[in-house]
Image (cartoon, rainbow, N blue to C red):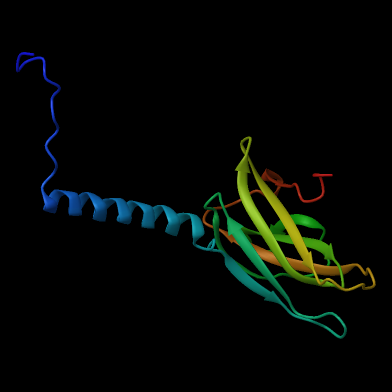
Length: 157
């Protein structure tokens, strides 16, 4: 067998290079895990309680990058409407239940429109189903037309 026919042997990396590769691999894995495991950031509001109705935490998850803030909203409005004297805010009102303990509102862009999906987490106990008015003002980064927002919360079933 001639020297040119012999299989080419790979020379091992120097110790420093192997260490650098291991550290880089650990760093990449750490970034991937951190990104996958970190909790979603959101905006929060606490809707006040009244009598038997307890306070209700509301979290806004803004996948569209539109929201600047959230606050307790006025009652007596229906669905999604313009906030009074605020072109960059909308009022979102819904009927909740007596046993609601947490509400999450996810805002995203869907087919050229803005979608709003509300999920209610209830306590695990049996309770009376009562229509409790709930309302938040959602402040956006730019002027917003309430008709451009589609509430998909009740259209999934």
